[in-house]
Length: 387
Image (cartoon, rainbow, N blue to C red):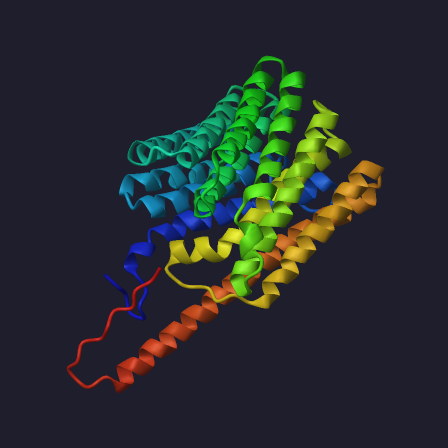
C-alpha cells in the first residue's frame, strides 16, 4: 500500500532503525575526535571508550542487519537491527555498559539466525562466507561482554566486516564464471583469516599475525578477481562504485600487511594506522560504494548519481594517507588533522546522499502532483513502484 506521493508505507518502520544506526555513526565519529585529542566535549565519561563498538556494532552492524532484513522480507529479521540500534543507544546515553553490550550480543546472534535461514535455502560458498562473518561478530561481541581488552576483540570485528564484504563480492563475481582454482584461492584466503581469528583467542600474538596474512590474502583475491575491474570501464554510478571498491581493496591489503608487521602492538600511532587502514580505508570505501544502492532499497527512493560523490571519496582517501603517514612517521598534528578530515569526508558524503534523496523525493512528488492535475476526473491514479 502506498502513501500520498508514491511512498510505500512499508518503509516507515525502517526509518527509526536507520536513524538509530546514523545516530551511532555520529556519536562514534564525535568520540573519535575526542580520542584524537581535539577539544570537543566527551558528552559522558564512557563515550570515548565506546568509539569502536559504536562504529562497528552500532552503525555498521545495524546498517548491515537492516539491509539484510529488507532483502529477506520477514518481519522477525528486523529484530536484529532493532537490538543493535538500541544497544548503541544505551551506550551513548551512558547506561550501564552491561545493558548495551547484552543488546548488541543479542542482535548479532539474530544476524547469525538470519544467515542460517538463508544458508538453508541457498547453500552457497558466498552465503557461508557471510555467515561465518556473522559468527565472528558474535564471538567478538561475547568477548567484549566478558570484559576482554578491546585490542583482543578488534580482530574478530575486522573478520566480521572482511568476510561479510568478501562474501558479497564473491556473489557478484558469479557473473565472471570463476574457475575452480580461483574458488580454491578464495577458500584458502578466507580460511587463513578464520584460522588466524581462532588462533588469536588461544595465543594472541601469532594468531594476530596469521589474521594479517588472511586479510592480505582476501585483499589480493579481491584485487585479482573482483568484477570491479570490468565495471570501472563503464560510466556514472557504475564507475564510481568500482573506483570505490578498488581503492578499498588496496587499503585492506595495506591493513593486512600492517597487522602482520606490527602484530600485537600496544595502542598508539602504529595501532591507529593498522586499524584505520581497514576500518576507514576499506570499510568506508565499501560504504561509499554501496550506499547509493542500499539507501534506495531501504527507503524506497531512487538516487541519481552525481559526479559530486567523488569529492568526499577523494577527501576520505587523501586524508587517510595523511593520517596513516603521520602515524608511521610520528607526526601527531598530521594524525589529528587527518582524522578530522576523515570525519568531514564521511559527513560530506552522507550530506550529499541526503540531498540526493530529498531532491529525488521532491521531484517524484512534483511529478505525481502533475499527474493528479492532468488525470481525468474519476480516473484511478497509477501506483508508483520503487526498487
